Length: 333
Image (cartoon, rainbow, N blue to C red; front, side):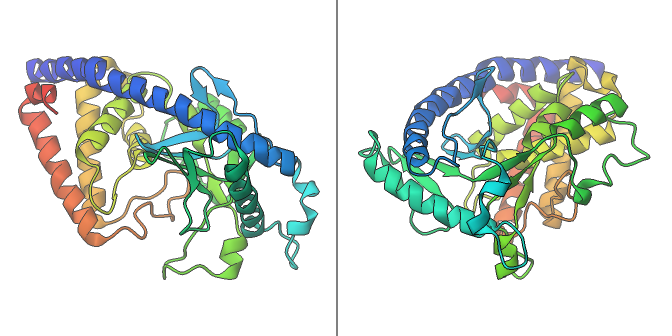
């Protein structure tokens, strides 16, 4: 057993060095190219409306607020806006700041900025959505989402976390995660019937990107996530897009709860952790439910076609079986 485990870890590390690192390098190059264009568009927006701040912050080779959905699809939610109190004309009759109204204003400004910016020959607005989406060089899609950053507070809807009977991540890390806070995003959100009421369209979506990143520090957690993202990009980019990188990130967090000791995340346990996550992914796909880590009543598979989820379950099972029974197959995966 130990020999088989060591063999799998050896091939996973090789996979990480060869495939994952080249994926990271390619995506970093794409992000730089995409961010040049987006930055130019947002500068133009800020000229028209100074309450939208345009500068993109780069830290440790990462652009703050930028999420990689897939190698060609990105989402930017920059939470550095002028104070909420300055947006009085977007407050609803019931006294709430309307996500829909702010997004509608932002969409109008971005459409004008696209026509004026110096990259206007290579960037176009995606028109069939209320989201603000840009198509760049006919290859990349970037969704730009108006957001407000809420640092140092924790939302009531996530107050149950961490669960009292689970020792991970420990009080110090919990305090760090809660201090990161969350973002409020202006995005389309649908109720269970797939339609959106006017109250829901005025509501803001909670996002925990920085808090989630902090949870995955230490051990082989980030390496495990990197392998999962690479496998997804290469083998699970399927019709109906049932799976994205965020599903993988969510399942790594759940695996951390199941294996709370730091020693469970030593490098020599990488194979076991990866197998556990792939099996959990198959189970979620078969049950057609993947609960959000901090907001478990929210299903991350909501709205995905059942046939796409079934197909993804079969493909994931093939992948898991191949890796488990023949670790050398990672050379070709």
